[in-house]
Amino acid sequence: MNYHDSRLTALGLLTEVHAGIMARLHPALARAGLSEIDFETVIRLARSPEQRLRMSDLAAQTGLSTSGVTRVVDRLEREGLVARQACPSDRRASYAVLTPVGRERLESVLPEHLHDIDRSFTRLLPDGELEAFLASLRKIRDVVRPCATAGADLTSDAAGCEKAAGRDDHDPGRDDAGRNDDAVPAAPLSPAKPGL
Image 1 (cartoon, rainbow, N blue to C red):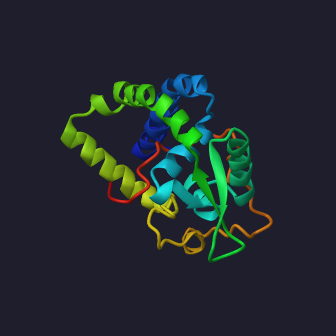
Image 2: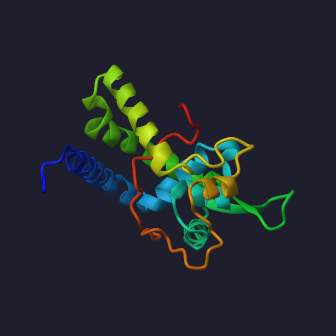
């Protein structure tokens, strides 16, 4: 058995880098009163059309189950950061919408958050290298998390995305895929719109 297989090295490095970056980002988020999944939720809403997403699209983007994303949105709604909005065309569906208070909280943490990202990640790579790295991450993301951009445009369909990914949110045996309300995002957050 080859314990030095380059595939093990690749995954090990990715895991180490992710854990290291998230550890450096955590203090600023904690000072703003946001867990990592809270921040992931509000930034995804902020970067979405009309700063809202169908709950099913938000679940698909974050990798949470329907019940998992409901718990996160419930908590954020209690804090006034997010509101629910009924879908006018489908009474069974609802949207999570970023509120003015949510935007204010996000804007209070973003300068330090961006500084931390720059200090521990983006400024370490020259522009061409960073662009190539981001392209590589998107290529991998599109295979391992095909629903990460669900709802990025007004015509996308989370249900179709779930089927393409081999997931069915209506499966009663499905759990949160190893994630819970306080889970760390599986990968650094990418832009909601593909190609950005």
